[in-house]
Length: 444
Image (cartoon, rainbow, N blue to C red; front, top):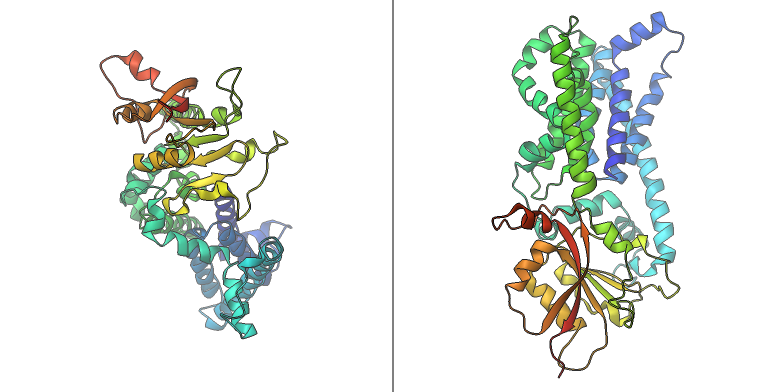
C-alpha cells in the first residue's frame, strides 16, 4: 500500500503540474496533442484522491497542498474569479464522493455476506437512516484507519519512536543524499526562486510543499516507520536528482560527477544488502521450513511461536497441507488473549506471533500451550533471534528447556542487536534466527 500511495501521489503531482497556465500556453502553440478538456481535470483529481485515500489514509497529508495549489492555479487563471474556484471544487468533490461511495459499497457487499455480524443491531439503532450511517461508517476504510492510528495505545503495540525519527533517521536512511540536498537547499530557496521561471517556480513549490507537509504531519505521530515517507521519493528526485549525480550545471565537472555517482551507487548498494538480505532475513526461510520435525520419531510441530520478529507472512504456507483449516469463533485455539496484541494464525501448525511482547507474555503463552504440571504431548517451537535467547537464558527458567534444532543465518534485528563479548566471531554468530524446540524439564 505504501508503494501504491507513492504512485498515486506522483500521478497527482503530474496532473497538477501540467495544469499550470504557462504550460497550457506553450502546449497550445507548439503541439497538436493538447491537454484534455480543462473541465475534466477536477474530476480526475477527485477520483485519484479517493483512490489514494482508500489506499492509505496518510495520502491526505501529501495530497492536501497539491489540491490547494491546483485550486490556486485555477483562481489565478480565471482572473481571480471565485465562482470558477467554486465550480472546480464542486466537480472535484463530486468525483471524490462518487468514487468513495463505490469503494464503500464494494466493501459493504463483500463483508456483509462474509461477516454479517458487522452490521448494526436493529435494537441499538431502530431508524433505517441511523442504521445505514452506523453500518456504513464501519466500511469507510480511511476513517477507521485514522481512528486506530490516532490512539497512542494502539500505536504502542507496534513500537513508539521519538518525533524526530522521520526527519533525522528515516529520511537519510530511505533517500540518502537526496534528503541531505533537500535540507541544505532550504537555505538557497529564495535565490533559486528568483532565478526560475514561473512554471519552474510553481513546480518547485508543488514538490517542496508535498514533502514538507507530509513529513511534518507524519512526524506528529509517535510511531514512525521508514516506509511511511515513501511518497516523498518522486518529488525529491525531481528537485534534487540531477544534483546528486552532478548533472545540474551546463558545464559539468566530470570528476565531481563521477564521485557523486559512485557515492550514490555505493549508498544504495549498502542499503540493498542490509534491508534486502540481512534485515529480518531469516523470517521467510524459517516460515518456509515449517513444519519441521524435531527428529525422525517425532511428529511435525503443532504450535510455532514467533518472538521478537516482524510479523511472519503466514499466507506463504497456507494450503501446503491438507490438514490446514480456518478458525471459527468457538475454536479453542483462540484462547490466546487479543488484549496483549498477539495475533494467531489457526493453520496446522498453529502460528502465534508475539511480536515485541514482554518476556512475561511469552512465559504466559508457554504456560497456556505447554503446561508442565500434567502430561502434554504437544510439540512447541520457538523462533527468535539468537541475542534474544541469550537474554532469556539469563531468566533461569526451570520449567522449560530450549533445544536449538535449526538456524537461519544472515538475520539482523535492529531491535535486538547481538551482544559484543570481546570477539567478532561471537558477534557475527549471533546474526541468526534460531528455531528452538521447547519442552518441559520434568514431567509431573
